[in-house]
Image 1 (spheres, one colour):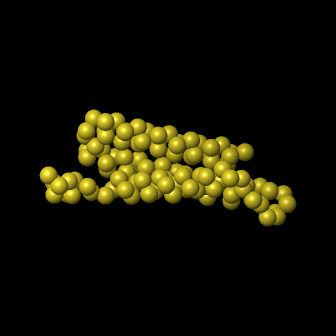
Image 2 (cartoon, rainbow, N blue to C red):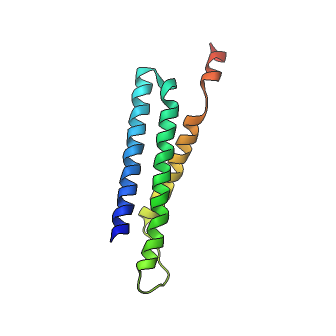
Image 3 (cartoon, one colour):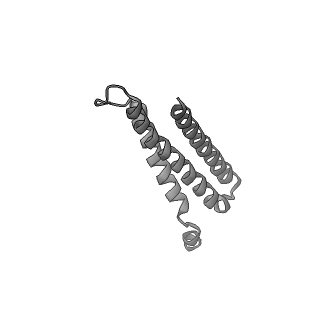
Length: 108
């Protein structure tokens, strides 16, 4: 069905954006220019979180709607892993929004 394809595309897009932002932050730390890319990485993580949460909300609604029995359903551990990764990506995005450049000068 179309909703399964949509959910898959949302999850894969979120994973690609998260991987891209992780690689961008890793490269910027290795080059020593990490202050300049914090906002970009944070925005990319927020975009990945929004896409992943949309997919994680869409999946159980459409799954139960398409079910014939309309009974109690338990989702696999992958669904919980998806919510856990969304929470950790949200935490990473919030941490990238913090300004550390104001505190670095006090130590030198």
